[in-house]
Image 1 (cartoon, rainbow over the protein chains, first blue to last red):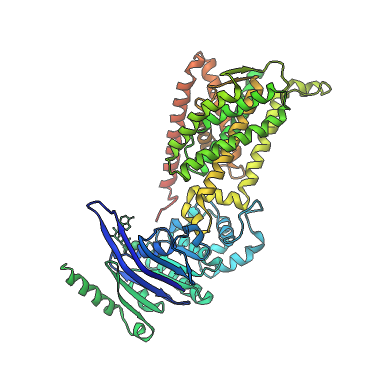
Image 2 (cartoon, rainbow over the protein chains, first blue to last red):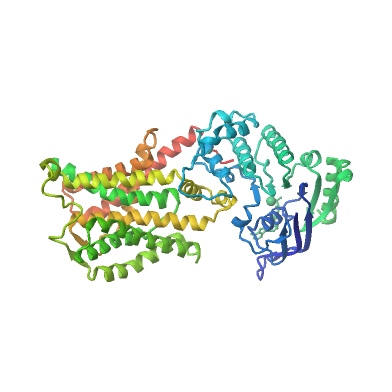
Length: 257
Length: 297
Ligand SMILES: Nc1ncnc2c1ncn2[C@@H]1O[C@H](COP(=O)(O)OP(=O)(O)OP(=O)(O)O)[C@@H](O)[C@H]1O
Ligand SMILES: [Mg+2]
């Protein structure tokens, strides 16, 4: 489904800050997998997602999506098949537009943005039913500007929008990190439901080890640009947060911290 | 007195069309576009040149608008494709347009006395129409442009335009090229500005190559006045507020001049008015924040 092949990536080449992050990095994700990515700050998780989405071009290596080499494809063209939810809740919606307007543009993804009416009133009931699954009462506030919603509400809306036109791959970058524990749990549960229901291949970065344990079919731990742990199936279901913590600690000792 | 009021409305609505353009670039696209200082006289230059050739004055309006669109697209391309900073991209287009406008009009000034304009109405019209012909024609054109813009902003393409200024990343995730949308937005914006220039030229019956100086600041002031005063009114669209903003702006300038200031002082008045509206705007938005408005989590 998705394959990163022999990826090299350095930042600030030729300066004192030069940093070789990825050296011959390889990763393969099969269709239908739900991968949690954990790892310390600066280990390259976001950069990996950016390379998949096309926001960052690798210095070397190739990115394959369903067999097509998309390494040179612009980020917005890849977005036809890749959806993304960011850490910052303001990134997933347009604040000066209403919930209905936001849902309408998200629903139009992959079709032409022409001179026909932007609001999709015909699908209002469908949008309401999607929003109802959040249990946040947003279905009764279609006319509210999303800028006036709370971070959790916006993030939940962003998730619904990102999956309205079903993507081949869903990328989630710490999408619950800015939320309070309760909202985070709601959004995480919703993520799981949407992903399972639509069988979307998903890569989720999280610092919440509990999520990595409870959700997903595979867990990868990143460290200094390498996947130092990669478990799935039974091996994954046997792992607990303590196991993950132990590996974290081992790495820090190795680094001399 | 009556004459002064009507003249304020005439000027307010002519320049209000320009302010609608700046509403797109500054408010929607978040792009401080200085090319308008060149596209306003561009509309006038094109109109003057065409009218001297005897072209129908109504036809001059869309042709001027298209010229403005092209110039706006150039600014967009400089910014999006060549990665030139927004402010500089506008200044470059503005600078180039000075020469272009000179070429088009053939001289720094052109007088159009005796030419027929969009205000030349048939003799058979009733007198109350012919007495108020200027304000009637200007009002109709301004209102049509306002509704056309409202309509565009409610289409799918318009939705994208509205999102690109607020959240470029969202447009990318919708699989659309944000650069292209910015170029389209700048084209529409400068099309409106050039149309305004064409109308101003037909109203004053002259082209003056320096007439664009201060366009951006004037339009921006009107946009900020309009939005600050009228955003509270729910049923009114911001585009209406922008037109009113320019009328209020013109009223302030007229009041300042009639209270004894020289017309050469207008630039100073503009700046003071501008800073004043910015302060008021800042003040009101700060109040909103205290009330717990937008939280950027
Ligand atoms: N645009 C950039 N310019 C320079 N260095 C960068 C850039 N992007 C990432 N890096 C560097 O690459 C490394 C990995 O960054 P990345 O954002 O991928 O980490 P991360 O695993 O997502 O961390 P976090 O958990 O803090 O989000 C860091 O050392 C970072 O400084
Ligand atoms: Mg990160």
